[in-house]
Image: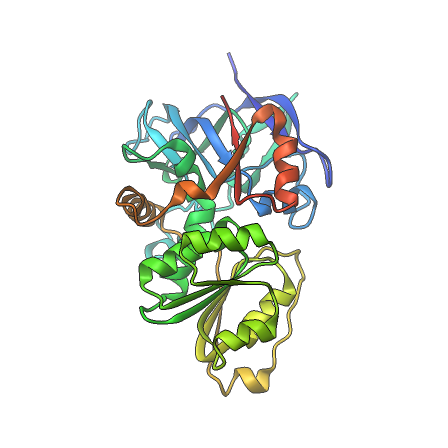
Length: 356
């Protein structure tokens, strides 16, 4: 008897997700079947749904998920049925040069996902290798990370992307030093996580830049010292010499270019916003080169799931990271279209899709 799952499928560019019954492939030896409890709606899900970053349809999107293990493959040893797990986006093999040098997000096998979902015999793309907008999903053992007691599944879900990207940008990519000045463009789930990470790192000043008043106010609660609109002159007036670190999570080319301009000589700009393929930005090379500035790219915080997730959970349990405040709303799977619209409007910080 084949295993099935209810899931939200996007059939084509700009199409609204609809609920269907999909067939799941039999577990391979290194795979885990997870019954999902909650999945966050990320801007990247919306970008894929709108055809901005991928034309792979039909697809089950969702990549910020947590749930309970239902079954495991014959070679799985790290988790067992009944374990609570968060899904990691690395999907890394664990053995290649990138994995063993501490950069699993660069693993060449991480996107080598075997077909797991079908609809009436036709393959369906498992978005981001997770396909989290479903009641069940199958992932490699390396992508199912145990959740400690005391961490709710809803909180663990956001660690899968928003938190790992924001905190990873601070600790793994930019390596923020204490006593420094920081500007953060975008105050969504990733930007808010950057703020929390910079506070833990001991940054002296954390300026958040966002056009939305409610998000600016929320950023102050997460630890920002200042929150302003995206006006370059106003931002520069706060630190005339420029910022030691600038993070861009808004996904806007104007914000990316402004981020570089606002970085002080010797400072670091980290870009993590998602934009359509082929997007380019301009920078003043005559200013950039003599200033010895650094421009870094960040893919999901170069997360090292088995190292970083445990640290984030321990910081949460000690009250150092207010991860629960990232979740500002939820919708059931049957009403996922409402959640997508909330995300498109920039409403709240993170809306969860709950599976019931």
